[in-house]
Length: 292
Image (cartoon, rainbow, N blue to C red; front, side, top):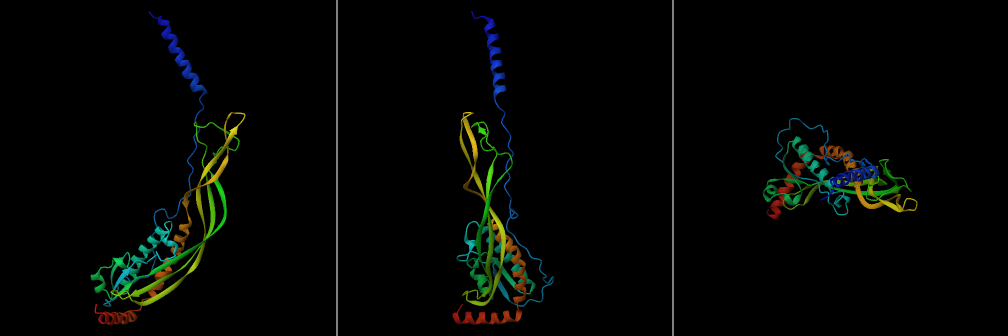
C-alpha cells in the first residue's frame, strides 16, 4: 500500500515547478501593428464636374447620339497595365455619364452610355444619327528620387539578442520615392454609327502633371549569432521585393481630377447644333450609299 504522504509531496512538487516556470518564462512584448500609408482614392476612382448645364433643356433638336465611354486601353497607354487599369476604368465610366448629361442639356436624345463600341446593338446603331466615342491616351514618366526605411518605433536595435520563437520584433517597411509626370491627349470623336466612319474629331493635348509618389515594400530581418548570449541577434533590416502598396497610379488619378472638368467644359463649347445637323445629313448620305 502506497504512503499517502507521497501524493502530497507530488502535488506540491508539481505546483513548485509550475510557479518556477512562470517566474522564468519571459513575457511576450506587445508590438503595435505598423500602419502603411493609405490612398486618398481607396473608395474608388470616380469623378464629377460642376458644370453650368441648362436646367430645362431646349426643344428637342431631333438628333440622337449614341454615347460610348472613353476608350482608355489605347495601345502603349499606361492605362492598359494592371496597376493603372482601375484608374482608367473609373475615369471612363464617370466621363460617359457626364457626356450624356452635356448632350441632353443641349436638347439632344442620347442612347447609352455604352462600355465600348462593340456593346452598341444593331437596333441602337440604326436609330442613332451619330456615335460619340472618345479616347484617352496617358503615359507616365517615373523618376526615382531616393528611398527610406519606416518603422513604428518598436523595432529591435542592431546587436540586440532575439530569442527565436518567443516573439517577433517590431515591423519595418521600406519606401522608394519617385517623381511622376503624367502626359497625354484626349479625343472627342463623332462616328457614323453603322460604318464607324469618323465624321468629327476634336483633339486636346493634356497639360503635363507632376507629383510625388512612392512604393512601399516589406522588410526582411537580418540576423547573426550573438556570442555572449548564445542566441541569434538582430542585425537590421533590408528591403525585400514584396511590394505592399504602389501609389504611382494615384498620381494619374489626381491628374484626371484636374483634367476632368476642363474636358467636359471643352465639350460644351464644341457642341454646335447647326454643325451636328449637317453631320446628320452626311450620315443619311453614307447610309444610302452603303445601303444600310
